[in-house]
Image 1 (cartoon, helix red, strand yellow):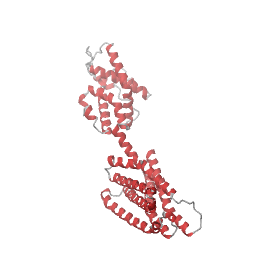
Image 2 (cartoon, rainbow, N blue to C red):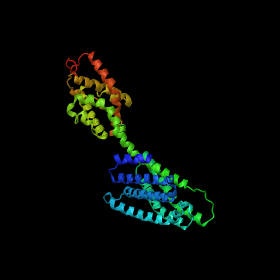
Image 3 (spheres, rainbow, N blue to C red):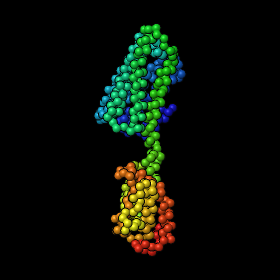
Image 4 (spheres, rainbow, N blue to C red):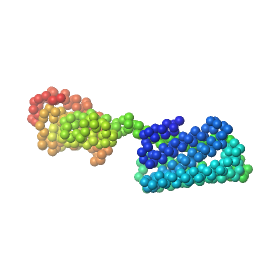
Length: 386
């Protein structure tokens, strides 16, 4: 059920790139394999359904191998031609599997119950592409672990893929080995007439595949619903951006309604740039002591305190500008800049978010205090226009 839902949603929302299409194609074959694996649908043909479900697994392998080649740097423009070769190879393997499985189908038995040399050939032929695909993925994982600078999440994904590929390789080797030992030796093996262990392996593989391929789907849905981190940051900055840019409309590239239609990342970038520009524009209106050097927020060692004090300066400067105050060139030279601990976009964003969190009550307090304070030498005595 989960794989079917993920497959349908991915086809609707994530089906643009070549890799996306190969993933979605593999998911479709996974759903087909799950349906065929339910032998209870037609018990008389359980052996046929089982072998056809293994054909679906082979089709999945063709897609995974194509993705692995792209992952390893193959030319994306020739993907279709390469994939045709992979599909043709898998089709030939499937024909060989069906031929080897003919005696089992004739007796109405699952292939694991037909202890004979065709069963050994069956699992050897089936395991060959499984092993090739697993080894290819393992090589890529090892290579990227050695040369790529991976974050914690990327390492977790690589580790899960490595574990899954290792399991596939073990399964590919175990199939023909166990079949040969059961056929030509008297070694005892656990009885599994319905091949429940192989069914469990297939189910877990399909479940893990669905969960991993659902990650970008969930991320896209979160973005469309505005639940992603970037959208949340943009919403937190909006009141600050709205109030500051109202004082400097010439700095605004897009009106609020048009900006809201932009992708979250572009919207957040634009808001950050415009907030930064308006904060620079408010420096001539800040109330600092022109005889004491730069204002005290920049000298404080604790970032949270510096942001709190800076927010008060910004709120009073904005209120003064709206009230008609004249810019003071001396103040502009010594007024503090936005507090920060590092000169990089992420640090700047964290500071602006902290400033935005403090903004509404600070602005309200600044408006209230101005109503009870005499005019400064740079401010005409008139009420702030709303």
